[in-house]
Amino acid sequence: MTPADGGSPKESIARIEELVRRIESLPDPSARRAAVDLVQAVMGLHEAALARMLEVVAAAGNGAATMEAMAADDLISSVLCLHGVHPDDVETRLRRAIDKLHRYFDSRGAGIVLLEFNPELVRVRYTGTRAGSGAAAKQVIEETIYEAAPEIVNLVIEGTEERDPGFVPLANLMASQPA
Image 1: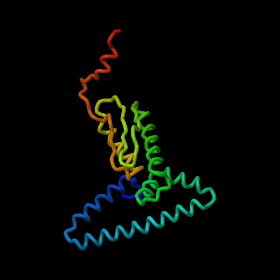
Image 2 (image 1 turned 60 degrees about the vertical axis):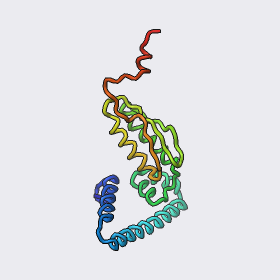
Image 3 (image 1 turned 60 degrees about the horizontal axis):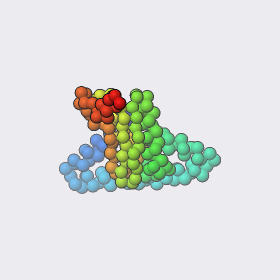
């Protein structure tokens, strides 16, 4: 399914990844090379067209508002990132993703904190208290951040490690000691 026929962007990306795996497994090296060349040519055409479309929109009346709306749209933003023509820099897109994660986790009694950001590394801390939520939280964080900023090289997520339900952190024990 594609977004055009009712599928989500994530479903489209999964479909593309599956097709890439199938192309990579073709036994004929000539067929693999032709398939890769075709995809690269189409991507190049799309990149040039999208870049030109952004120039036209920016030059048009009320172009800034239109650009902002496109940058905030999940589907459009992911395609612009894919082609390297997103109007926002990586830090802006990362901060938008962190804000999205704040809204998601705040409504669930958890949190997310951006600890470090540079071109090589993004480090965040998840603060959730529900047992068993770490793996699901990690997946949501990874998907949200990589969708917004696929060029991030390393993403470190602290606080999603599953703990023994009987484990009580030392700080909690010390806090309950009478003075």
